[in-house]
Image (cartoon, rainbow over all chains, first blue to last red; front, side, top):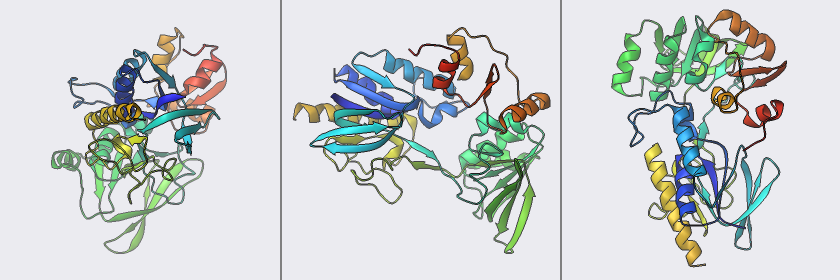
Length: 305
Length: 63
């Protein structure tokens, strides 16, 4: 029986883990990997204390800080998929068919990339459809690619890809681009990037690999086709709360609703932090802060049990 | 991450950059897809960095 089980090894989970371990609580952290969504980032410049750090470095320092603590066990790669309340304690079942019990839970399961949910997307994942331009841009050297999404992630992906691809189509289903103006300027000034607004992507087409996409042009209601070999989907992220939503209150976006003073969820003994919650500002530093609040609240909860 | 893993476990490897056409072709031929990394260990193909599988194939005991 653990005192605390933490689900997810991004900055929120790691912060919770370090604090929980240092309070001498018997702690387990279950995660697919360390680092969270930023682990694939090319460069992080706003993690307080580090002028510039790569996503890989970030993941490494988080992992090593956890492993330097006593009182904490790590199960990785492992993923929690079911949580049960067993007379006040919690039983966590994972994809490795293991189960672990704990008096409290800290949910820091983060988020995953949103999918378009259109025909061809799943079929061609890894065969032209991609979600990480940092990882996959070089594969598309001298090819035509499309980026779907015009927030900062989409704009950033278009810029990354323009270094390799012969042409980058940036598609947005809105009237205009939505990312930061300064990044928009870079995109607009690139002669490799073609911006297409009011485009609703309908279908991804190909044989063994992606060869084109079809979109509805909202300006003239015509269906148009673009010959591309790579399609990068950058339409935001969705919280990983499916495995816990029966036990805690979540909002319309699927975020776990927490008391922002304590990190408590609607269920006694379950705390949450970071991207998976209704925290307004989804930033690594804030996720870490939230993880610490959750750990200290779990500690106080245990004292009063 | 794969390169870190190999370095940490003193495994020598040959790295091929897929922005090079020949390497890209080889990747497609061996794995039938475009995601990276693709790791070939004596003919066994692994797509993505899977520490568990790599440890198993390279007979590395997990820490």
